[in-house]
Amino acid sequence: QSALTQPPSASGSPGQSVTISCTGTSSDVGGYNYVSWYQLHPGKAPKLMIYEVSKRPSGVPDRFSGSKSGNTASLTVSGLQAEDEADYYCSSYGGSTLVFGGGTKLTVL
Amino acid sequence: QVQLQESGPGLVKPSQTLSLTCTVSGGSISSGGYFWSWIRQHPGKGLEWIGYIYYRVSTHYNPSLKSRVTISPDTSKNQFSLKLSSLTAADTAVYFCASCSGGSCHHFENWGQGTLVTVSS
Image (tube, rainbow over all chains, first blue to last red; front, side):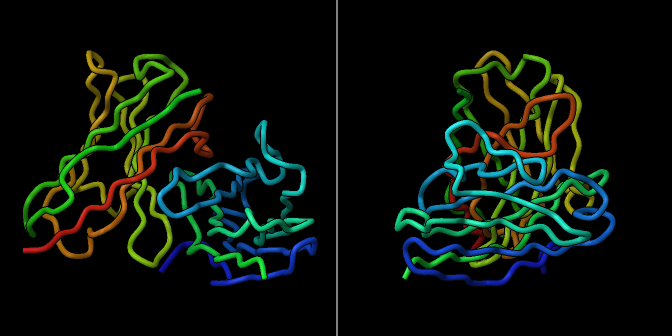
């Protein structure tokens, strides 16, 4: 069982917005502004999409945004595109360790 | 941009020790300010942070794996390695190497493609 809880699946049509949640505790998500999100395509290197809750690395489209409220962080993908179909994982610093979520499979209908 | 590539056996027997290597390009593992990490993904499940090495010799491991894990550098080859002992089927996973930079490691900027390791007799 993963330390952070994510819905196993999410979906949306092209152009729509989808939000994926990531729930932890006050010892990780709620305690630090160090939540990050990763995009995994099969056979490819995972890609950092969001770090420190809401910051985007260079090259990540601004369609991707992150936020946090209490012990729950969220990743929102706006203007869905076919290439956004992938698995998304959240992660949080937990004081002396790094913890991940179980992953969410995003399907673009 | 730092690039990473994992290598190692795809099949290992139970009770044995797994040895994986991560080759780094575009950056030096001897440089300060980088944390060289291992992460794994069990089949159909989430990611699990294993540990990292920094400042060449300092290490920090996931408490749940600490007794079985060793991460070490090979600065001459710009590589770092993972050794995981006393393997069981539960260690079957895709193993990724990754890097973070800065004063501490809070997120992973660069990843390898991963290598599947199956533990089976």
